[in-house]
Amino acid sequence: MLRILITISCFFFVLSLQAQQELTWEELEEVTFNDMFSVEVGDYYSFPTFGQGPMDLNNQVVKLTGYIIPVDVEKNYYVLSRYTFNMCYFCGKAGPETIVQLKFSEGQRQFFLDERATFKGVFRLNEDDVNLCNYLLIEAEELRN
Image (cartoon, rainbow, N blue to C red; front, side, top):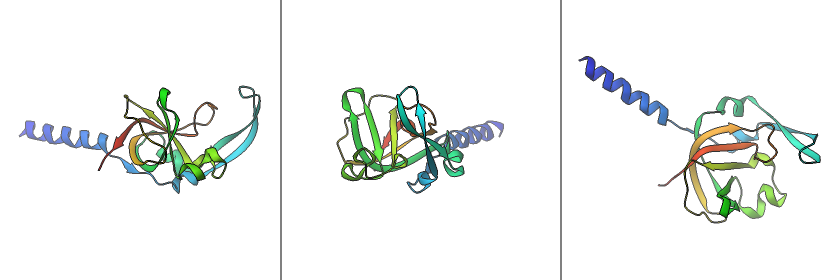
């Protein structure tokens, strides 16, 4: 009987580790930006102040659907965007809260511009590294239907 209880407990523990929360783009809007001088950039840079919603999701396993923006395919640098490329942050039509940088745990297939996809990974906030997006999806993994 004890073996069965231990097996069931282990099973539910593994399931809890795999649990993922659906992240919405609306939840990522809970952020404000303050322009401050960055010595690293040599210019003013918009530093984020995250609201309680994104802070509560920090370090949680989430899934998010959006449009792929290949920033540097050779370096496996992709961003997931709320909008297609013609309306995304990089074109100046949306804010930095509309993109999430994908950091893959292992090599992924090549993705194409404006391809719609869903990813799961560990959601992380970035407040101070100007070389990364404000929102990151660490150990990102594509979820296929």
